[in-house]
Length: 79
Image (cartoon, rainbow, N blue to C red):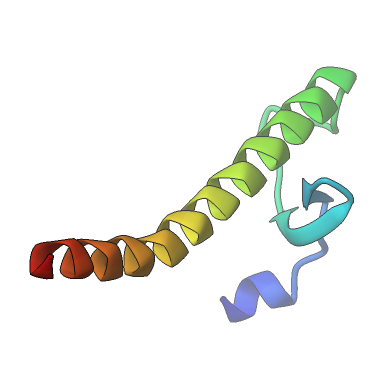
């Protein structure tokens, strides 16, 4: 991890939900055969960022709802 901290970041992809940035993906190196980024790379980064942001939000919502579901199931079991 220390080596990455000393490495120049090649690209930063924001993870956005609506207008909120919930995180970033950082690209530190390119594959040996890549000289730079193309428009296609940018499109792929945007798609990756959108999917990652939605996955994070979904995981958070599932975690929050898990407690509510257990509470509801416990209540219904007593009825």
